[in-house]
Length: 316
Image (cartoon, rainbow, N blue to C red; front, side, top):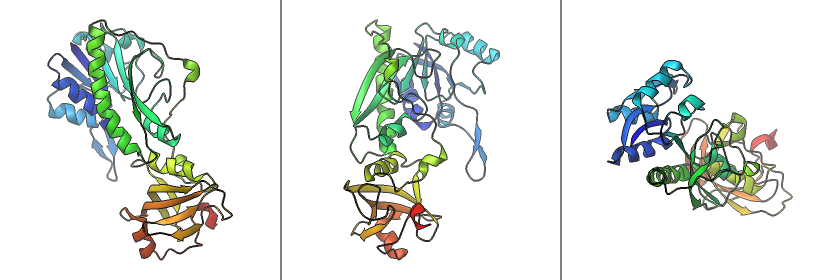
């Protein structure tokens, strides 16, 4: 099958690689976002998908806007049987959606109709979901609103981080896509309409979500910490007023406490305990501003942390 692949971040690379390794498929072009300046030096960098494509001598297209007529003509000339889209970053117009014989298939990192949008992995963990997964769907002009093809669910533990789930789902997504194509080509798959009334949304994360609010429950804060690990990271303010990123935690209990939220209530062998709006949270791995990540126990020793000290807004 002649396939055009559209994707941008690391999550999409696994699916592109799976298509390349499948002898029954030919990737005739890879479409990804334009190179953009990143990092401290604002150096112009390729997307992870482009880097992979270049290393495998694949044709790469980088339209600033997919509605561009010249770009659409270029796609039309390639005469694809299928377009595969994984975290591409632009909504496709109907002129592209109608182009391939088998349509456009999207690999989405959630159990649709839950968590439509750009950050489904983060939001599933922030919400404390007990399972997540991948859905393949036939694309329409909406945002993740197309008919579903296949789903694969995975259980989530109370400790699963965004990074761990990301790496698990990208492998599942690649496998599920190959199965979806095979069954679609054989006529052995029935598209299922989404229940739009059950839809939830996972919009782009904004900076405000990174800040820990100690007035919230221990479980809510714990879900934020693991849901933003390794990117972009949850943070609070140290007793010295500087930023402190928190990478790993454990809920001690969810009982009411008479301590002011943000108060360090105890030092433990593996970290320290902080009072929350409801419950107590043990911080296990932290990163002081301009320093490397360290165990919370090492942080306590190095920064002379004592019980009664306050984190975050509580200290003001």
